[in-house]
Image (cartoon, rainbow, N blue to C red; front, side, top):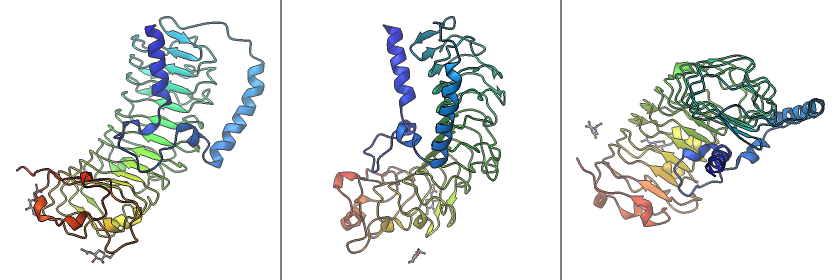
Length: 374
Ligand SMILES: *[C@@H]1O[C@H](CO)[C@@H](O)[C@H](O)[C@H]1NC(C)=O
Ligand SMILES: *[C@@H]1O[C@H](CO)[C@@H](O)[C@H](O)[C@H]1NC(C)=O
């Protein structure tokens, strides 16, 4: 019974969308599910189809699987669960039809060339919380259908090369990555989502062309050592999370590339200055998170952001809020009213702010003021 339960929760975990960690407020846009993303993009599509064809002929020649399960693991139809076993290497004899392979919470230090041999059907692989620092350049070659690779909490210093072209989601949070080399993600036309926060990476660690060829939707590089918004990230991004870095300013050109952003997370940085006009490049933005920075004014340009619904500005150093800081003058410009504006933790007295400042807010409860305590 407990085995069944844990397999079920594994399944739920692995099938979840990438932005699961985002706050679960009413989303101002549809977060599309994994299967939608998988069908995105011509490059991704055609490679997937080609691979299916190759595979079809190859698998017919193989003898049917006998029931095997690596010692100590729990095996169910297409699921092999080998977590929390103190394994120091990937177990042998993983059934060829395995779709989900869970190796988390072990002591694996290295991925060797033949570790995943024959696992052409593998869809999701979790290596979370091991001690992996070494990855053989051809270890992923057999994984022609791998879509989700969870590599968080390991000891990697670079993003492994030769990731499977079928990959859609990569989580490589909390490693020791300082560098993403040029071409790391080349050929990954289906990739949608990368979570790589918690790595000691600086802006210079992203080599020019590091993200070339990617049509990413979601990228998180939080809790890193960034001092500015990286300028060379995929221009397809809908969500960019850069909270908990050391960013000090947003300069005019910084957001130029990211026209499709819906959600931008810049909380817990040291931003004092947002150059006038820099937000005009992200005119589709729904959510802007700037809490816990050092802003002294509401950023310029919010009234022109027709779709903006959430503006987190709490715990800054904002001492004055003007009547036209949030809403356009007159009617017609704003398509979506605000659902959330947070201003608490700023040295501004709410009774000094004119009520008309919030004329384009859906509901008065959507404004969080609170009291400023010195
Ligand atoms: C910001 O730029 C707009 C035009 O883009 C201009 O009208 C406005 O006066 C500027 N504000 C400041 C404070 O420079
Ligand atoms: C807050 O802003 C004021 C100027 O408005 C400045 O004198 C003060 O040093 C700032 N405080 C912090 C913590 O940045």
